[in-house]
Length: 365
Ligand SMILES: [Zn+2]
Ligand SMILES: [Zn+2]
Image (cartoon, rainbow, N blue to C red; front, side, top):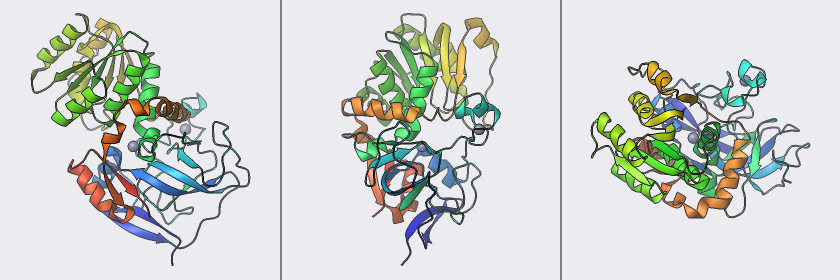
């Protein structure tokens, strides 16, 4: 009988279930947990397809709700100072800034050189403490890795996604200083986009979404988008720009957030903003994808661009607070439409890649 299991990446589009023989030693400042539920994020699908370099044998998974199994001797609270005990549900900041690079030394932990896009958190399962991905029966929260208690009343599958899209979107819109009464352009209504709509609505902003996929358009409306510009109806970029200007009173949006992940969306987004607007670039993360763009498009309109990946680690606490207050008001339940046992991770990844469902989750037994 082995102690536990992990789902590892074994090559392009290949996974392997590996048995871990023994429970790892728990350091005094670490927390050992059981995985209750873990979501298949879009980035997991990228890793699985081989689109980002990942060490062979790395454990997949980063979005999860965990149950505390054993607290290290020094751990009495979560990272917000809430008392934590064995059996409590928690969720981790899945990446761990190094604290020493140029970004970290300046307090910009989201810009950590070590974390980057593929993640230092993905290490081969053979290296102790083995359980460093959430597609597994257990997960080891490192010393200094932040984690937070899941508030009562937030369903596991909703809380499981808080440490990724929602935290990042709240951080992004904060950096753009989005305020009540402003108009926000959201380009793309995938996971990031829908969360952006919810956060913008709760800030009291008016939301304009640009999207082309029928299912996503429906969801954007359900999440409260005030206007949706359907890319099938407005096929040409110029038409879409005019439409956005029209619904924003002629000038364009005060804030834009690019979460479509398409290079051309950047140029188009800038054209949909008013002079002096703020623009958050978040969706494009593949450096080999390019687009023709004149920097003067920014200067002429004095656009203030914020770009980001990841988030300041304490934003996970804000994301969980957001869900505690608002999860019931948005159709988060509809987003997770497929559940698999851990053993069927391969099937869950395949289905996610083929867009057979919006978002799958794995439930270890
Ligand atoms: Zn994710
Ligand atoms: Zn760093």
